[in-house]
Length: 128
View 1 (cartoon, rainbow, N blue to C red):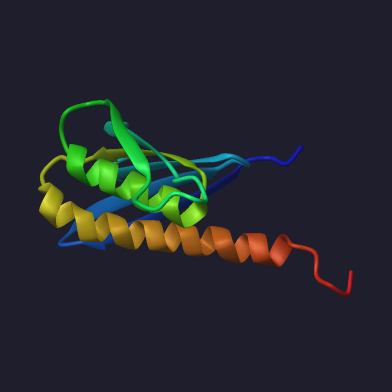
View 2: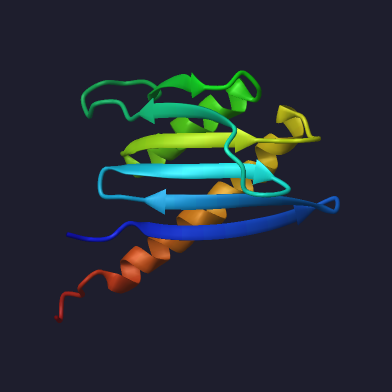
């Protein structure tokens, strides 16, 4: 049985630190996004659409009432990109959803690109 992959990333914008903690398992991804320090915030879940259906992933808020739109959007984007169940937590102290959205998207790109590079480097090649 394979172990979960864990990736941590950090971006500093306007002297504020934004953090991402990404945990990938075989059937799901968990992404904690926060401003300042690692904290649990509003949690959204998204399921990818079935192969024959057209449309965005299905999503819902599980916990919290702040940053609900950005949490759902990011969960849907992660679910669509990875074709797995996605749980996304968003916590902000001082920035609005509008400000946090582009920053958190950058963090998702950084963590997902690291995760995909690692999976490519550990995948067996055709010559093996």
